[in-house]
Length: 228
Image 1 (spheres, rainbow, N blue to C red):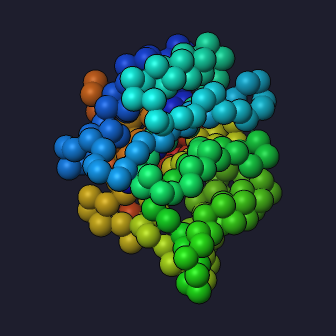
Image 2: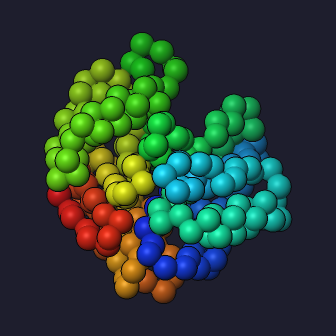
């Protein structure tokens, strides 16, 4: 299970958003916390000036102190865009720092991309290829580029209902796989004054709009939102 959130804000962030996200992620849709053999991991990434950076990552510390320190650091940085994720994983799985950073891009996803001829995942390979394509495109062409890239990777690998968030520091982008079921790897969007949030769960205090399967949302740092 993986939950992701992307926040684009022109003003001060609220710690309640991060705490609500953590609470939703830890409980999950089934209302249960960690099960036997599971542990949690999380990460928060954003921008210091024009540099993509990690503000913190962890998981085994149950009190949430390290998580709070990370999002407080992120809030003080005045990063206009933040992406965070929260996962429940098997204790035997190797922890990989996430959200991932590639160049000046940050990305985080739900679902998996696995090579058809092996157990090895191909997610990073896909996102690096996608980012290299997007760097040469206008944001108005992001949707087409993402759709084509997903179709290509689906022909080569097995995709487990992929949805993701990514950012280049000027835009926050969200995508929901058309193969996702009605309640599988959901993404929601809310936009209020000076803030836009894309998230896999609906935080309290906002009116949320669900992503339709195959839809792409691109939010500019200035606050303009485009849906494709």
